[in-house]
Amino acid sequence: MSRIGLRLIFLGLGFCLSQAALAELRIEITKGQGEAVPIAVVPFGYQGSGEEPYDLAEVVAADLARTGRFAPVPESDMLQKPTTGAEIDFGDWRIIDTEVVIVGRVTESFSNDFLIEFRVFDVFRAEQLLGFRLKSNQANMRRTAHRISDMIYEELTGIKGIASTRIAYVNVTGKGKAEKFRLIVADADGENASTMMESKQPIMSPAWSPDGRKLAYVSFENNQSQVWVQIVRTGARTRVSARKGVNSAPAWSPDGRLLALTLSKGDGNLDIYTLRVATKRVKKLTTWPSIETEPNWSTDGKQIYFTSDRSGGPQIYRISADGGRADRITFEGPYNARPRLSPDGKQIGVVHNDRGNYRIAVVDIERAYTRVLTDGSLDESPSFAPNGEVLIFASRSGGRGYLTVVSVDGRFEQRIAATEGDVREPAWSPFPLN
Amino acid sequence: MNNWKLLAPLCVLLVAGCTAPSGTETDDGVYGDDGSGVGTSGIDGGADGSAIPIGDDRDTIVMNERIVYFAFDSSDVDDASINLLRQHGGYLSDNPGEKVRLEGHADERGSREYNIGLGERRSVAVQSVLLAQGATASQLSTVSFGEERPANSASNENAWAQNRRVEIVYER
Image (cartoon, rainbow over all chains, first blue to last red; front, side, top):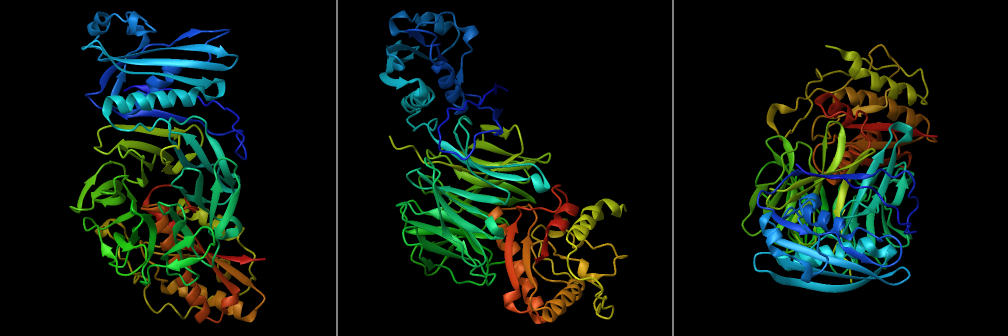
């Protein structure tokens, strides 16, 4: 078992209500993948004034380790520390069974401006696979490291990397009158956590807009559930629904113009509606007397998946985004709820009752086949990473709420806990717009 | 069985929430059923019993009881709770200036948003009983907190039974 110890670094991004006293996140790989590829990220060289501005190699190595597909070689095992391709002695890397070597260097061009070049080599073929030069500055070094990780990951696997994505989640600290709910956005590696919203009342169900610029969420200000939309960068927010009764479960349409959400209009019957964000006007989609909630859009925006207990217990159904008849999607087990579409639209992640335990399962929509991914008893709130490789979800054990990232094949797992309080309700951001 | 652990948080709630008028008497003639007829439609077969938390029976002032409990996955108000709600309904009918907020809650199992639905169903079930007992619609409001505000944050059957509830909150 390897442990990635991460410390919070506050970059003072200025879009948050408060960055003081935020609980740190700790990520621990709890289940490894046997066939992880040995990869060496050699410490980058530095030419310039003062100290090296940032340990890029360390961040890149941690990003690659977190994918579960690569096992970074410890620096102490490296027989040489080249910073250019010309300096590499491939024999030295074959001896320690390293398959891929990454070298690079940082050059100060102006004060606080840096040129970064990196190269990726296949050790056995002694061939360069990838080489790039990028510009960055002190404040953006960490982001640049994530970008480099994603370029390397995509080159080596053919799959887009997620090191540059973010995660929204709810952190709950204190008990009774001291209880505090915080909506937090952090980088995918748990760093740069910023509080978007803080309340003594519950905060639920954060949902990223498709462009990654806004978050919709539920808060219980004034003892009433309300749906809000908040701009991540500025913190400015608008209340989009505070109708009588339940206002909950917001989900963005792929074009970002509509929110599907759940309203009860005060009669106790939860139904799915769509809300036009610009006008805040709603349209009712479902009319059954049962609970209809947890809408999630198909990738083409034409259909909405949701939870309904019209058959007794909760199951997943699908309805046209214009309304009409609903088709039942899940049939396995007495409880399937909170559907979340995979990015390719072929699977849904759900909360599934597995012999009395609430676990995360992935349902193949076409074949109606259910695969249980997790082994907890109180697992909930699945959310796919935008590359579809992993899911994040919330669990409880030992009286603590924490998050877990699991690969869709269930073989690789890492746990994310806060140093203070519970973490829950994770939502993975889309890819950043570059 | 050690009841004190189970009842301790309940007593705190009862005392802390004590702003309703006192002196209302219990109606002891309404326990027609034996109270075991709680509708359970549990999904796990016998794993979840139908045990419902009850208040301290030395407290004869029913109006001080502000919590209605529910069986697993159920929004059926049992007979004992109907008696309790009759007292509150009568009081609201006699005092049209009074307002209550009915806060519905669920236990932590399963999905959070679906649990919002279960909590709402429960608060609306209590609302219907209060309306039938003489309260008017303008005196009542409902909110569902789902599993977000547990009365007992432990993860066991007793805690879950204490968390499946509607709290009657007099707004002053």
